[in-house]
Length: 219
Ligand code: C5P
Image (cartoon, rainbow, N blue to C red; front, side):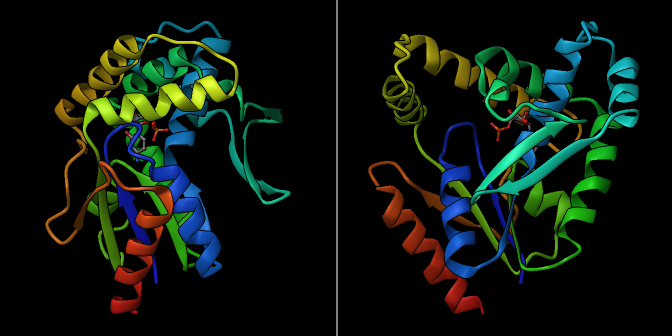
């Protein structure tokens, strides 16, 4: 069985997907991290982000790795561990720009399907249920209000010792959502056969339990 979890920025997809994968002993694949790694590469190589063919060639000539180490997923750009660096605001915005390029998405689709070939994966992103794994047995569309998503991110950053402006965070999230839903290739949208889970006001545990119940009904 494969499980696809899609939804807008900051809906808690990766936290929830990781926990669901852990409970079911499935492999977790974070496709957002792949776009983030490419965005990091663009910045590292000082390429102009607007140069679609240069960005696409960069992906072709480099390797993105998702490696499980000590129970955590680590992200590599060739042999550089970029796990922590790809979470910056700049990389987030850059990721949604490189993700709007058709030739980039075509390559990512091939890589992501290869990763899912083993079966029993939980994959999260924006187009998993609609494009990458259209035959996934379980499809979830995870969302929450943009204010709540910004508040969660704000709390997460504060716990790490970074003070940020909540309104600014909400604006950034909305900007990324706008880019992800309005792009021409594989825009963010709920697959027709996906179950909508609005997590506003729900705890992580409640969301995980809810998804596990949906999986149980399907399996
Ligand atoms: O999920 P995350 O916020 O890490 O994703 C970063 C960016 O990568 C998103 O804003 C989106 O533009 C892009 N993305 C995508 N398709 C996916 C996963 C991520 O376009 N399947």
